[in-house]
Image (cartoon, rainbow, N blue to C red):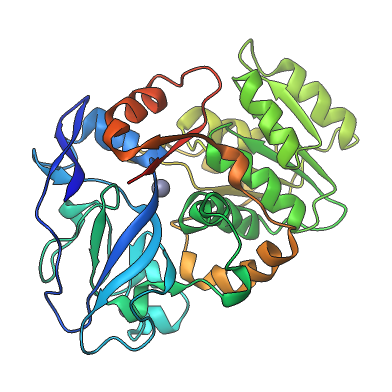
Amino acid sequence: MRGLVFNAPGDVAVTDVPDPGIVNPGDAVVRVTKAGICGSDMHIYNHGDAFGFDAGCRLGHEFVGVVEAVGPDVTSVRPGDRIVAPFWLSCGECHFCKKGLPTSCISGGCFGFQAFWGFGGAVEGGQSEFVRVPMADGTLVKVPDELSDVDDHVLLPLVDVFTTAYHAAKGSGVGPGQTALVVGDGAVGLLACQAARLLGAERVVLAGHHDDRLAIGTRLGATHSVNTKPGNERLGELLGDLTGSYGPDVVIDAISSADSLAYAANTVQPGGTISWVGMEVFLAAPQLPWDLCFLRNLTIRGGVAPVRRYLPDLWPLVASGALDPSPVLTHDMPLEDAAEGYTVMATRAEGSVKVCLTP
Ligand SMILES: [Zn+2]
Ligand SMILES: [Zn+2]
């Protein structure tokens, strides 16, 4: 079959890779119908060697599809079932899975991140025609029957980018009557606007550097947007006007660099919450201004999204039409063109937010 591999920084390619099969009795094999290229794939694309990715590693942790085959121990899905695959593999049975934190599963790992997987068989990437899914009962989630007409473009963001944004919004505690500042106009930032509004935020201010992306954020629910490329002055004025000079109740930081976190700590109002989900922390651990956090009684929340925990809450919103994250998928390309898709994402081509692939 065909699948995407990492060759070297800046070099990925779709090539012939081994057909996946059932290795352990709890495995399933999924036929991928749509796969996403993620901002975190860009970190691998740019610095994969530094993260322990060897040439030939298979990439992709965002996919939806149809179950092709299951091992004898699998009970929750059957061949032919339409599924979504939360990006983190989880057993469903350990202390952390039962606690609702499948991303801390003691036998867990991430699709497309071989370097972080130490269990049986290879963990493969979802940017391919088929994927072996270990621990299928604890990992795969069957799409509810009432959503059978819902397009893959609506479901795909639920396996990572929307749920990551939702996790950030939940963690911020934002609610009715409140003002949220969302920093960053990548897919997660744009969807954080949508998530904050779903949770009742009255005002959502989106700050980013790309007018085309800010327009998508407005479509998804941001009540205000500011292009901060020239600087943060206009953003500061707007936040002052909207909040009686107190600052936003919460800041959702979808970048999480030293600069963005320092800005959040200076800008959120006393007693407020900074919720961060950006991947910049893996490049250079930013130092928070802890003195400000103390003096201003700030709460800092953040972490990897336990996607599986949130899906039961999200299905009814999808069914009613209240949740449609598909506007962030600006490009849908054939799997064979995946390398070009990586270039679109890496260069932040005009009009692009996120690329998905169709095998
Ligand atoms: Zn992702
Ligand atoms: Zn577990």
